[in-house]
Image 1 (cartoon, rainbow, N blue to C red):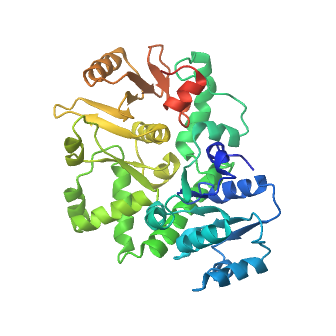
Image 2: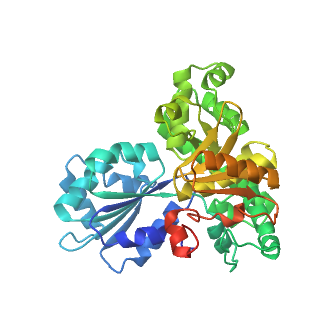
Length: 404
């Protein structure tokens, strides 16, 4: 079992009274992480329940919550002392927030919970568990985690200190990462055929368990076609009216679909960067998929757009991401936390760097980088494989001793 980096963030809350909630896309490793945490808890008074098992769900289908307590006691939980309850896939039980609140408030149960639907968890947990929970989001493997899962002991260098020799060392691994993505079950497969099947399983599971079972949409085929259409538009601004026309659907329906796909971690939309918030709200969003491997399996895109999608997923783990574009067409691919500019290029050139420096200066951004796929001796050039989780966040930069 491989330890995910998110565990380090969760560690300070292992003994806190609040519930720990882990949410994210299907098959990103939430159950494995929950199991790992379970093994780290030094107590015999703990219980792990997989709620995809209908027998386990039955324990919580009581209107009287004291009966739920009785059911858990029969399973070995001692409510007279500190108890730990691990529940996997909580979105399958509608009343789970109130159950957690009751057992937390009356018996000080420490909960560790996983769920696959962001919008569902946040909506239900926002009021009933206010002040009683910490929510953590788990994503597909970043490249640093990918190396661990591949059994590689290579340590990523500081992003601004990469030699050509180091670049060539990491390139084949990063090419594999771009092609197949970061879903753990895919990364651990050895053959092309097995990886393709694993990616198909990821999409099938998402479609069946999130869209059909949880979404309850009248026309799932229309939503399927919407996903395929969005895959072709990765990295592009979304014209909702045009998309609605192409699919023969209303604009409200398209917005509903988009919110659902984003709320279940399948994709992410980003808004333009602007010092004027009203301008940001008025402008169109761009769309990116949760994983480059899944994107490659759904659509046949050029390498530049797949690379850009992977860079977005690396940056989003470091903070808030926007894009910048003027009416004249001048743009910056990504602006991180309103302070750092990132322009994605397969081949970095001095002309690209000069233009980026000029626009970043005009926007008063503190730093700027070209993110290249090929090696370049130019300054301010970084590489996709060097942008693992949080590497450009202030916290990580401070820890590594190179950032501002």
